Structures are given as C-alpha cells and as structure tokens.
Amino acid sequence: MGITEEESNFLKFYFLNLKIASKAVRVYFDSVHPPAGLAGELTKGSVTLKGLRFMTKLQLNILYPNPCQTVTSAEFDTTLIVCLLRNLSPRESAPITGWDNLPHPNDNSTGADLARVKWYRNQSVHSKDGILSSTDFNQWWGDLEGVSI
Image (cartoon, rainbow, N blue to C red; front, top):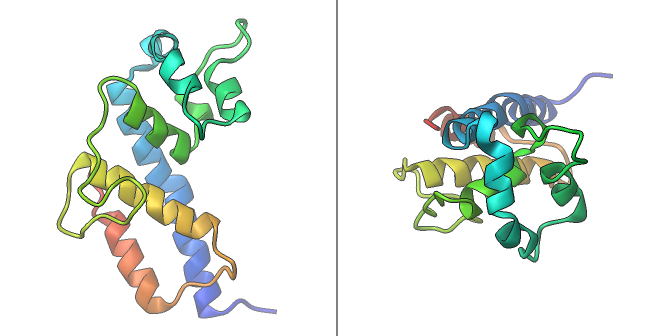
C-alpha cells in the first residue's frame, strides 16, 4: 500500500522541520549561549525559568539534570530552545505578530525566524491527519527555506 502525495508532502515537511530547521535553531542558540557557559547561564536564569507557568517538570529536569551530568542543548527540542531564547538574557525580541503566530512573510528578523520555525513545528506535530496539500507544502517549505538564523 502506497502513500498519497499529501502524506508524502507531510512527511517531507516534517523531516525538514525536525532535522534541518531544529538544527538551525540549535546552532543559533549555541552561538548566543555557548555550551561552555550554558550551565552557569541556566543557573542565573533559574528563578525566571522555574517561575514560568508553562515550563514542565520534564523540561526542568532536562535544564537542571543530576549534578553528575552535563547540560547540553543537544537535549533540548525546538520549543524549549525558543523558550530559553525568549527568557534568558539577552532576550530575543518577539516579531510584531508575537511568538505564537506565523510572522509576516517580509519579517526576516531573528525573532520572526524563530517564531516561524516554532509555528511550523507546532502545525506538524499537532496535525490530526498527517497530510499536507501541494500548495501548502510549497508555501511552508519556501517559508522555512527563507529562515536565516
């Protein structure tokens, strides 16, 4: 049994977002919060991060592992990285549309690129049917291709 074109579109886009876009977000995060100083930055920001109403226990365990373990951004998913960029100094500026909406196509700010990756990630992860029309596929792929973080 084969898959439909819409299912193939969805899988290709999901892979782009999971592997390529998330890696771009991580590389950017590591440039702002270098791995060598990450534990110290997380300690400085712990009151803020632990006070966020949407921060889960699992996320906090990833950020603040057992003292014998080293924290690394390789353990962070896109959502957590964007959260950290929004809440650790220096805080990333939100796009004009906010963090939870798709930014305007002509907004190429870093905040917009981060919001764009997060928005498309959420669309993929929360898809109810696992299909993506060719029109949406081409639009979404182009939007992520244009990300320059």
